[in-house]
Length: 491
Ligand code: 5CA
Image (cartoon, rainbow, N blue to C red; front, top):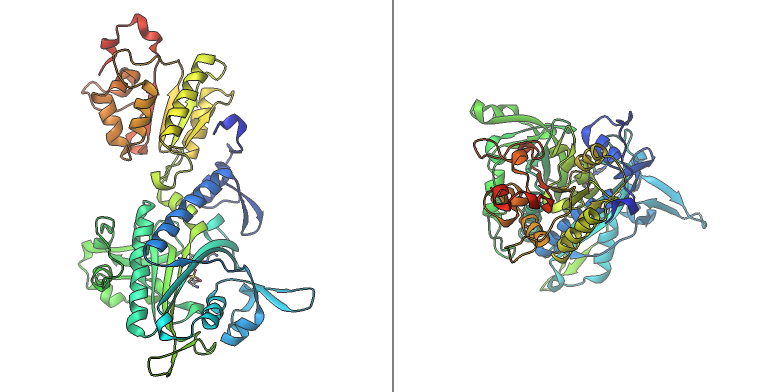
């Protein structure tokens, strides 16, 4: 996308209403705008990230065997009277009357609605198990909406629901979601720790919250440090096999939220291995047996014709909250530092001379080379001074930046064009390794002004490349240096 034609309304000033970094950065980077308290409009940059998060959630739900449906945001009050939650939910529920004076509500969650779907369609034990999910907006009239999308009134949730014949089946469904959640959050670059949790208004007796550690988190949490470094993505998962040993591995070490905290048990952990921190709840899973199926009569006929009340669980992920959560976990003083998997654009091409046809042509070719590899780039072709562009690009936080201020020529002796070579580097997921290679030996090394990038000892440092920011900043220099012998510019 060409930024001059795009809509990314960044703000220089720090908005007064934002108390935490993610809220400030989302407003400043032009990702969201508030509509009313706890209700937001998603602008193009924010929506791109939201969709990327949604896509990872969807892939991992599908992988675990869940099937996607889409239930409405508006539900009839009768369903909630059947479960007994219509009155219990209190003021958090937004109640509506339609033109026929029928009582409706904007769904804060969907246990009743999904139970209605299943009881109407499933009659026999042979039809079970079933695992259904949807990704839909919810409304909860929170007393204190705050921290931007982290505690909104309207928010996007992935909610899944499992239906099984017995406890063993329900436990397997729970374990599937447990493992799928570990994978989902890990793919977003997050360290999310499952913790024993209170079940609150959803109910039930087995529940885990998935918590991302962050100083600004709303919950106080306590766990064994060993949980922070566990790596699920290195495992091969077979969702049809018994997953209990993986779940046990993650649950055998102490981890609990404030409400479930057992001080004595925590203090049994050697002091150096204890972690008392704050965290953001990005997911919450529940097993609640027949809490809804019993009053709502979700039953199937067993093998002998007997009536079996279905065992259920529900599994939520705060999709819109994750946008804020990821920023809380990954930002610096200049802006957001997106993990590659959810970045709104992978590369920013910073055109420092947009009025120079050759420079703009170079940027366009680079853009095309990246597009041909399926890499999304943002071409900053705005007519602004370089400092303003650098500040905006750092704020937006693409994993890669390529700064172009003079036109490139094709590599004379190389077979690959410069643009392709850069696209190739950027295509590598391990940004810092890629840049190291590029600076060291690769054909594109001559494109990087060595005096800016290499220290006297040959290590990476410098003006454009801040290792601590984990960003690759490939400073692309001109081949107008044709006066300069090319070999002398080679690393
Ligand atoms: N029905 C169950 C699971 S499907 C349920 O509603 N669980 S929940 O209440 O824990 O919500 C699931 C997830 O939604 C939470 O873990 C959290 O990440 C997110 N969430 C909850 N309330 C809000 C809110 N006010 N703003 C943003 N995200 C929220």
